[in-house]
Length: 274
Image (cartoon, rainbow, N blue to C red):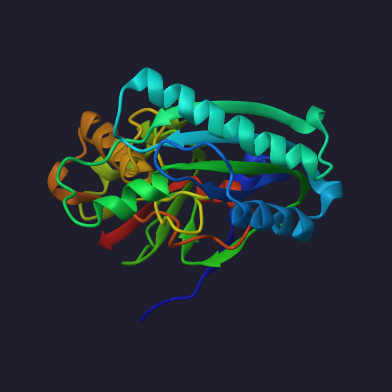
């Protein structure tokens, strides 16, 4: 029998009553080009028209290139692209003072084993992401069925464990000191309860419309949710949780909570056997 217990996620009280929302618009470029095409100028204008301008706290602009060419060239080209997009934004009346970041990130690496659709993948990597950081709105306590803040004797297969300190920094898969401390407790519980098996599930938020996965700023590869899940998986192994009782998988942006996007930068532990 599947139970439908609903509990409040108390980690939101620790995480903060307010969570910042992000909105992303991407502009794409031809090879070696930095000029913004007219169709993207129009799309950018439409994007800002739909946004509640009173809630925009700051704007960040990040430029990228494909994986072809030398690092210095790609860094300059991605910076030029970011600056050209910034110029278009300011033309539309957006004030310079709320644009807090203009950065060229250089090239985005592609996995060595990818052979199909390389031209399309590269075309999506030649872009600028405009990130709007919105002023926070009050976030109500989330209640979801089968979601817990820790393991308990009543858990069944499919129950999800969501941890208060497993919300990652944007673009990062690195575990914080707080997250490691929390995982230490989880490891002890898993070692004690030898019947529980889990899947470590990684998630991301705020990716461009054409991408289900996000870029890990540490590796520059589009495997962020995978890397987040793997980081937790490896840490639990380090803490003596048997490898045979765990798997890990990145789910990209395919499983949002439907609340503040920031909460989707998370890792969950899903029970696969009890």
